[in-house]
Length: 451
Image: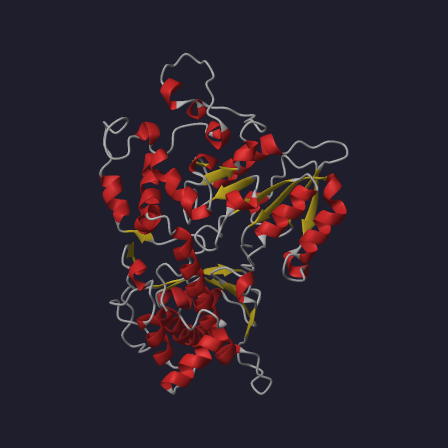
């Protein structure tokens, strides 16, 4: 058994610091953790961009030969090396030929996706974009009545999750006013549940990166007779998902697709015969009868019947390449063992980043003009995903530009939030240490530009 398994991230860092006889801020810590990382081989299948050439006069800038520090894997993952190969394989006769015939291309990836989210293959379908999914699913799941007209959702949910055209009445929970955990969500369901038709939350909150207790929310909602659904855009591959076991009614599966990318949908098997698609398209027909062109409805059961049209094959290709990164793991049916290992590494990456941020950028009353950072992501390792949301005491736009110049890919939210997301698949502890060094340089450079 790994002796680190029972330790909190902070205890692990303290232990390694003592073992090496160095400060927790020393680069030796990052090197040691990288050398002992059992998952470091997962970095190799991805393409990491190189830092662009920068003026040699600034000695803090790297020379264009180092890999970027890629910290946007919460929403836009790195390109797998196999993506180009799969795209190059497509040709004019691809409709029924080749390694992924277009007529059933999505069938190549749905079992892979089902393993990633803890579902049965027949509970998952690959189709459309995330926002389209949500509206198609809610048209069938959201059946408001005079006594039960409400949808419970986050006030600050990502815009794609605000289905304003469908909502007759809603209850919104503001994440800025939350107490942490899921207590207030569960309280709201308990008090208002008789009037709630659908509970719709993200698995991981996009702004604060809070990891919601999806199992508890599902149980509470279903106890009150609500359909419960989750937007798992930030949760797939980031958290241990057990959608089938939890009994969640409907979920949206984004899998790092990027803007406009192909998304997946989940509908639990218990709803196979009770919830039917309100909108139907020819791609929801049984494959055996789909191409008869007789317009006779032969709808597939469950989520597959919610498909409307052909999948864009050039989006299926990179999706397949991404899911196959862990393909050998899935073949041997030990994905959840690996997912637990990924979560363990993610907790330590987050703890390491948190430790360095707090060391260098905590508020210091003796230096009133020094920029400081407040971490708005929950402090408990089990209540967050793979991102720390950093609230700076200074406007962040100029700092963000300086970070980009130095090869840091991250995400900014005006006026002062940086979302830093080192993911366990391909990010290293050295990436985190480099980021802290580059952040100091970027803050100094942006201050000079503003003077």
